[in-house]
Length: 530
Ligand SMILES: Cc1cc2nc3c(=O)[nH]c(=O)nc-3n(C[C@H](O)[C@H](O)[C@H](O)COP(=O)(O)OP(=O)(O)OC[C@H]3O[C@@H](n4cnc5c(N)ncnc54)[C@H](O)[C@@H]3O)c2cc1C
Image 1 (tube, rainbow, N blue to C red):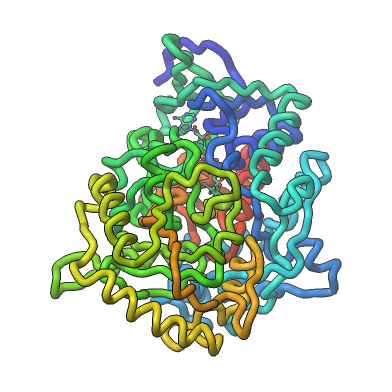
Image 2 (spheres, rainbow, N blue to C red):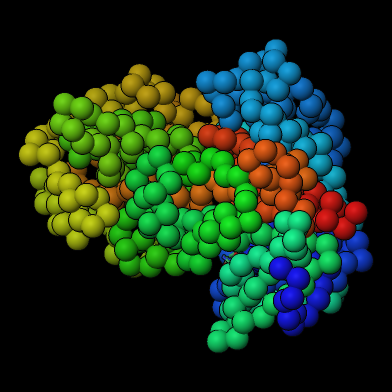
């Protein structure tokens, strides 16, 4: 395609203004490239702006400065074991992983710290260090650095505003570096030369269409396909109610890269969290996954009134519980789940991280309150009626409040002893750390206290949601999009949730995605400008 009438020429065109896009932009600009960013939404930042911007960065310099070590072999084993539990082989040269996934996680280990240092050196960001926050599987023998890998924008002090700060800093740096960011601008197709190299792209800006020629290449950083219900149904293993990724993350690039011959991987995988369904229904743009389930006199039951999981399980794993199938009733017994707490646990309420317990003074529209389990059952039933489209029209089982009373009695006995014989609640370092975000309880197990014998009780309905999706065009260790024969498509890169992640099924720790993406952006930008 050589007779295109180009509107302008840049070295690097970047689609998307989350960490993947703006991270690539600042690194490419620092290398002297002319860079332009196009963003589909009217506002910059994507999902990144909603996040806390924790970044999981193996062997980072803060960890090293604290006298700890994070050896490469152990870190790769930790990642590989969790990414592909059924393929993992500690003694195999790729640890049992497909070659491209192994090379992807190895490149991550090799460059993640270097990338973070570079953002700091350029003056984009100063980091804070969550020195004692554990990995999600800190209890595994493969985890040789169970704490110390998480960084966050220092200014956020580890609070939920980290993503806004990160995006603000990256955008300010783009402005200083002369990198324009155009909002309301959507990449719609790629332009190739006669040999198949990507040499530019078509971008819709309102009613106008522009053709931008690229001397070095195009970086796609457009997020996943969480917000497209058709693609969710077509590709994902499980049925999700939706998610908290940016509303504009609809997987536009899947068709675009298919046309230029890209291979795809991990299209079935989502990064998951439980979500308060009424908040999703009422405010789909602002809703967040419930990343921490706070409280001590609190439990979560299915619609039969039974506990099914440790309530403190980290979100990606917690959400697996929704998908258990019961062939006897030919239904998902744990989808949705109901979180229940008493008045005393209201003190664990708070804003941020999708806390299901409302902050003091907040309109608790998603919470049912009643004095008895029977009245609570009635209230939850009414809410389920309202949520029918999200829940597959399920209703509470006829025996719900009776079974719930028995469940609470058993739970209370265990809580008094402080030991959850059924699900080990609070027994791992990460359950303790996540639970503590909104306050620490008392007693033999601060994560477990008996539910009061008297109401009022409070409840809300939780369903399985996506943080974003993890599949897309397959990339090599430089983040170049590859064809099915592993050959890179010259001039085409993909970073972040729009690309297939080599992390497979895993969510290694808090900061799993942004830690990885800040590195992928750095590696892609270095390669494209080299
Ligand atoms: C509430 C919340 C908290 C989170 N906290 C953390 C955390 O602390 N640590 C962590 O690691 N992860 C966290 N995550 C996940 C993390 O935010 C994302 O995985 C990450 O930010 C994705 O970055 P990205 O650059 O790939 O995509 P995004 O940040 O989603 O950016 C993609 C951008 O591309 C744009 N776009 C889409 N299509 C087009 C198109 N055709 N043309 C141009 N632009 C397009 C979108 O509008 C969007 O702005 C959190 C997520 C949520 C929702």
